Image 1: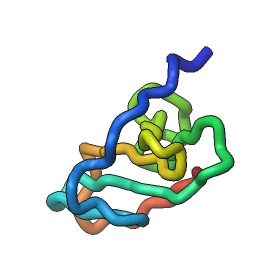
Image 2: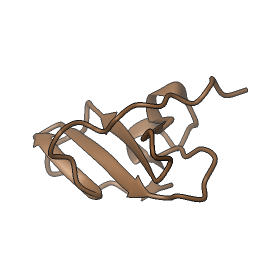
Image 3: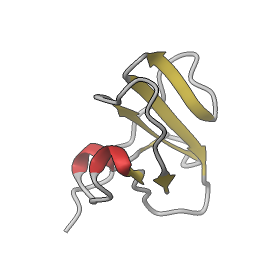
Image 4: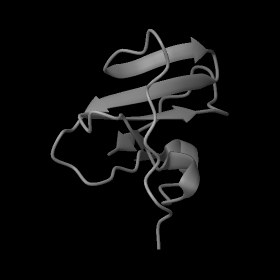
Length: 81
């Protein structure tokens, strides 16, 4: 069972898509106004659903975002949302 959806503004300056914060951290932001919840699965989480990849919804219900940490610089990963 998933935890309740977190409603929170995306950080200032975050645009739709992948926002690189440093070599190992990104914020993924998606325009998805008709979704009830979104997970960002990928090789970085072993393709497993968890709270770490459960995306937050913006107050206007149009976007979802999540900060992903611990990425390996230069490693090509795959994602599915």
